[in-house]
Length: 307
Ligand SMILES: Nc1nc2c(ncn2[C@@H]2O[C@H](COP(=O)(O)OP(=O)(O)O)[C@@H](O)[C@H]2O)c(=O)[nH]1
Ligand SMILES: [Mg+2]
Ligand SMILES: [Zn+2]
Image (cartoon, rainbow, N blue to C red; front, top):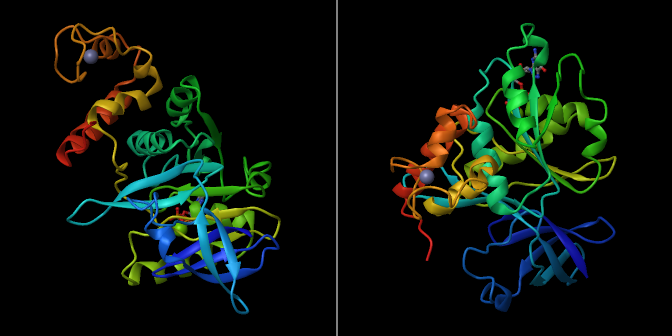
């Protein structure tokens, strides 16, 4: 039977069956040792083939190929991959217009994370617009819209922009990410009253355990669909992107690569770099280039290189 992984906790995996009923499953040994072994722990959002054993229990026979993945670097001394979810239909990057201050760098990191994992259903959500009487967010909204991203402006406090947003949670799998205080919990509670508390309790439970590098939990919405909240993150570091590949996840830079004077240009300091020239001419936003340079330095530091 096919099922959906809701939560992974050590050896126990909570799977929703086709009828929606939840079963505590374990993985058959050969699945773990199979071709998906390397870096392929089962995560929330994975599709599985499973068989019931006793009441409420089952065994996972196979893991379905993934459509996409959201993967970040876990905080800690040693770089570790933290997979947030697989098979993500919608990825809401939630930032506040004010309080905390709007930092485009966070948005860029989340966009890179989505692009490198193959997640295309990205929505940049600028919340707390009720606090932004001066419309200071406007340049940021314009920047990302011009790059082709969907940007919505919301206020969980006044309900502005929330119509239509709620329905989008009711199909497939949605994941929210954002800095602490941006309003993720408030948005979730607008989608379904009490939802934020349910997701937070589980996150606390996760944080206490040893399994902080495992994925988040999926919550079934009464109106349909699943959602995964993620703990508020200060610094978001995408996982496993080779430094020389990073530029391909910035669409306005990707369209210019190959034209620099040196074929292996890092776009950081070489003469004749057309990406840096475009920044100087104002065709590429400085904030975007800053994000590129910062993430590049981190990729170099952890030594992720192609080949
Ligand atoms: N003024 C205003 N406050 C908001 C809005 N959304 C959330 N808040 C408040 O901002 C604080 C942080 O919100 P919360 O949902 O907990 O953020 P989270 O850390 O991203 O989950 C809380 O005090 C909320 O009441 C909004 O749209 N406008
Ligand atoms: Mg929260
Ligand atoms: Zn260059």
